Image 1 (cartoon, one colour):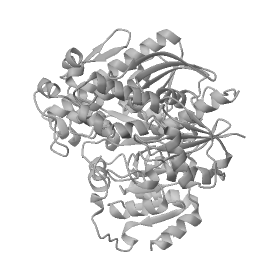
Image 2: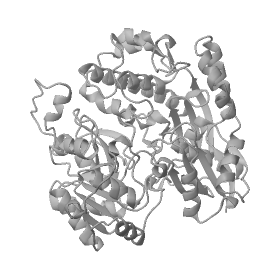
Image 3: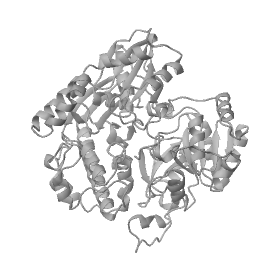
Image 4: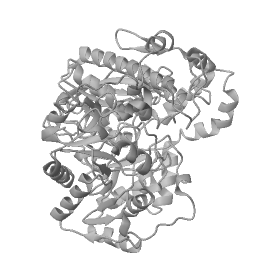
Length: 610
């Protein structure tokens, strides 16, 4: 047997993936252990946990695979500063040593490994490239023997958009768009301009879009981006400052839209909503044009997606409904954390004479449940140490009790099985609620998640009933497809006159208002129970009790905090918020029964706002 460790690190979302003979053993993000969101440091905690989970040592690993080529990246950085000379010269001089040092990725990793495992040799290093790692992470775990593969993000080494043709165990490059022309960076520029944090606030911009009108689409297409018929595009560089500056946008960008960037945490106005709606429309047009081009070149029936822009699940839904492809697979860890998986898989198929076997239906991601699990003994020991009050229940009684709590509009922390890999909670580390409650969306945003009121929540639904509640005829196990709520479940005759912006939240649009966005859409997770049987049992129990096979499913954390990883993380988050219940393993905890929770410092200051 051959073990390969994939690593992504030093930019954001550091992670480790361990594969054995091409099959995923585990995949872990460093932030879940360090408790620093999007931790970019060397993933030492995740690495230790991966080896421990597999019961192996570093000496058992045949290859270390790194997710990008730092030498090519350094070449791009130097070339960019040279092209923009003298602007940025001082910044480049100050940071040159850091940039140059990162070229020696083998030396950096060797030093980290010597500190962690002083008596063990370092396996040979396999260096992938950023977009090739993305492409490998999308195609190789997909269920398709052949597919078009599209990777779109901010930037890797030089590439910002790449297209590939996956066949069997091979990935053939087709075309690319190079830095500084980047759809991901264009979207991030609007993220910045609307007052959100780049590399983490893009999903807020996507969630804000339905509140606005796409009034600025023509301005964006006339001034900021030239979109060609073949899907290629260029950006007008005068409007951006991300090449060598400290901001995403230039003064010309602010003049174009008539105002400075919104201050973070200040009031969100109709202007920001309209800007969000506009860049969302442009993003969808570019993605559709790219998809049409890759379809014409490959004639493939299926499409695989990865890269940060692949997390734009509204655009994914539009691609799916376009009918260009029979099916779409989106890598659930589409960001840089998934690069660790792609690097490992690319290394496997490059270094081994391996065949790839797929069945056309099931992907190899195991539901994205690739992290640590905790058994009842570990959970009970933690609860006892923390002084928690709990009751242990038989599985059927646990489901029944949880269903009653949810039906009574209680908010439930849900901690079961192996942790998810990627940014979405999928029923292993989740906060759950009743989607039929008109007030639950604001309650969970403001009292549980401590985040902005406009942000929508996603529904988890029994897979076999998804088509009755949403206009969706394909599985969406990773919550990466937005689909309209089924017309039969919407309330008819809704009068929106007099409502604008955030006021639209006051209107009840469907039988499941807490997961219905203001445009009657929802980011759907279909649950078939193949990899998460207990979560499916809970949904089935809720459906039997209420007639509704849907639950609110959001990540088990508060704003700025990584998703909880351990039982202690879960209990801490439970006690810090107004969650009513915690279901962890076979244990049920009720908030009123818990001892007083006290922390010397205000925990809200612990996490940087995302």
